[in-house]
Image 1: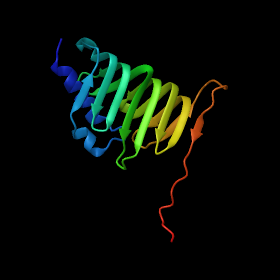
Image 2 (image 1 turned 180 degrees about the horizontal axis):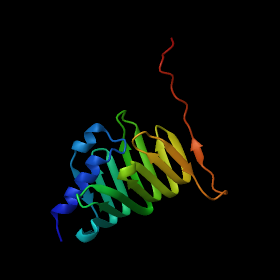
Image 3 (image 1 turned 30 degrees about the vertical axis):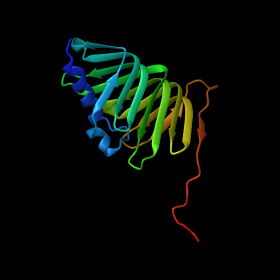
Image 4 (image 1 turned 90 degrees about the vertical axis):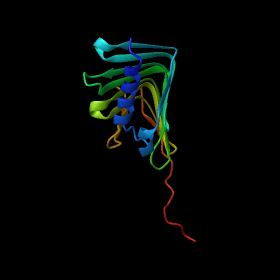
Amino acid sequence: MTTVKPTLLLLALLTSAPLWALDADREQPIAVEADSLEVREQENISIYQGNVRLKQGSLEISSDRLVIHFNDNNDLVLMEMTGNPARLRQLDNEQQEMRGQAKQINYLESESLLELIDEARFTHAGDIIESTLIRINTEDNNIQAGSSDADERVKMLIQPRQNSTNTE
């Protein structure tokens, strides 16, 4: 088992995946805690289990299990977080907090796609989206939410935007 490779793999993961990050987040050290770590070099995956906590700058991830998939060049392919719920938190460049939680959260690097699956909730700047599935493109910030079940509805709370002009 290698102790250096998981750190390098996490570094590749977090420096390549913006997730709306503060620009300075990519330059921050990465701290990871878990009850256990298994590195499967032949399969190019690292599995963190038990009270997983990851922090880099404003990015915070907590989950019961974190599985990171890489290609042969150690580039991130997929990050899977599961928990009851799995959670992530990050600040954007305007210092607005973003939070996501779901029983499963996936980040697909090649598609710049963040998926919150099963009891999903995403908040940003006071706005809230709740659904069975929420998909967020981290490049263009497009959001899709919904379910294949007709009984499941998307719930949203949209805060009024403050007028940028100040009238006296």
